[in-house]
Length: 408
Image (cartoon, rainbow, N blue to C red):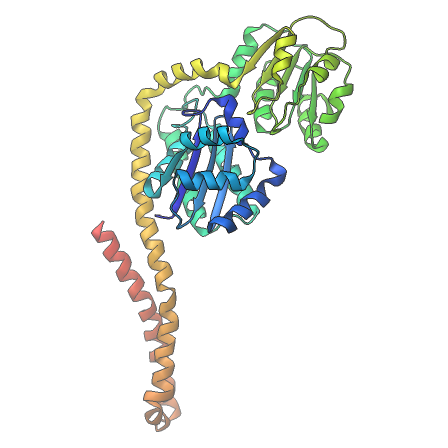
């Protein structure tokens, strides 16, 4: 486990608005991570980006410290200026070995989240890992760690009250939206068809909102969400020509540049002058700052949910002890399993070694004696050797596991 390393940039050290500067465009993600793997001797890696964290989880024998983190981020070439690079590297949290596993488990259980108890982080972690696995960036080690991550998170959510009446960023955003007392026929533009917007759409649909237009870079994804909502589907490029007006914009994309510029916003208003509402759950924000300066807007963003998140932490604080006990137990179990796995890998050579001994005995050491035996005796001896061979292969493995278990 000493090769497990995590470089984490989170809401605890970095303002949410600034975290967006570390987000890597999905189109270039695989290539950038593959180049970093080669450059830094990293055997496995995956990248996690959510509204309150950007993390790199890797398997490498390299010493991972602030100096490494600086070189690593520079290699990713995400356009950070020198000043920001220094600020981000200073704010980075670096975890190794068992601390790295503990961090991943705490993250999956939402103990490190802006909203303690929200379950979205587990799904986000799994998807981040799966995307990198499918891209060929991960292997057997991270597979084992992710199995432990998922198992632990499920136990925490099942056996504690940490997620009772869950309060996620999405549900908090909806509550603020609900406080505005909008009519159920309010015109709602949804920009982005990812998981966050799918989730907030479920809240809206549940509370009888029915007038939707969905915009997404990939039209088929917009069409799928629009079909679920009974709305219309468009590509994001169609925003500049959309002329049906709106009451609410809900946006969450992975774009590194603003989607809602003053020009786009003016066009969407279509001559209307009333105060509109924007729910922007993207990091970085999809809404250009100039829009908020130039127009009357009810603006709901991740940062504005911070105070509610703090109250949420206080309400759930008593459950943290239970969750941490489950995490500690799972770490102990994983360490035992990891030792067993190492034994299994070490024992892979045993069958071949035994076969070599057998062949040497038959073809060299006892070759003359065997030639003097009749056919029936040779067949009996062959069965005896085969039986002993199979038993000898299993004996070292069983003994090693017994020793391991008894020592623990």
